[in-house]
View 1 (tube, helix red, strand yellow):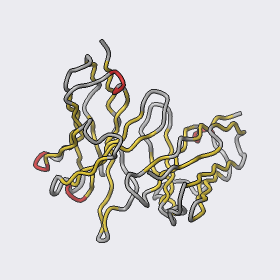
View 2 (cartoon, rainbow over the protein chains, first blue to last red; view 1 turned 30 degrees about the vertical axis):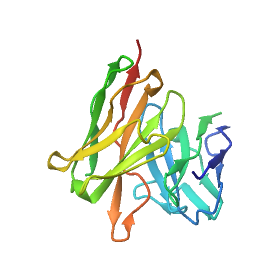
View 3 (cartoon, each protein chain N blue to C red; view 1 turned 180 degrees about the vertical axis):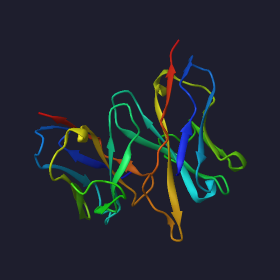
View 4 (tube, one colour; view 1 turned 90 degrees about the vertical axis):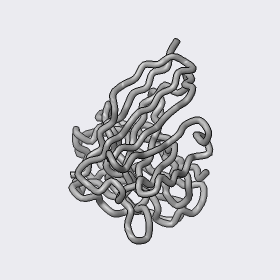
Length: 107
Length: 123
């Protein structure tokens, strides 16, 4: 299985801050990388697909970049409603695998 | 609107069998593959396997192969996840998630997801 390593595992930031999460794959996955947001008690929701494409309806403060093994997820200006755990997910090889998650809190 | 609605929470004893369901609506059920994802308490997401409802072809993660069975009944737009003998370690939230299929194959991301079914296994 392809291992996905996210960092940091948790993050505390202030409203308006720029927040960055990284995800590293154990092998080249091209751009087959997605990002999800999971709010407490809710199902995950896709925000970014194919590394950098914003899902319809997702605010433009969310963005993604990268290819190969190294990927970045950014929130340009943190909002209170962004409190959640964020996961990366690769689909280059079966089985699809997720990063361990990054818990984002408001400072 | 594409929507997945899962069956309700279950409390079972070790050794019991269980089948949970995921009903699709608002779209052609055979146009989306359905995956099942496990989330153990306080932990991350683990992909268990998926099914193509058009022909019931399944693919399992090696970690779950032989421990669960995924099936679907396209006549009622419903997918299932079942266990023949539950263990305490099966206690988790289980999500179904849909994956749109295009000309070149499945898109690779999961959207939308069901609301989750909490399975508790305890003696």
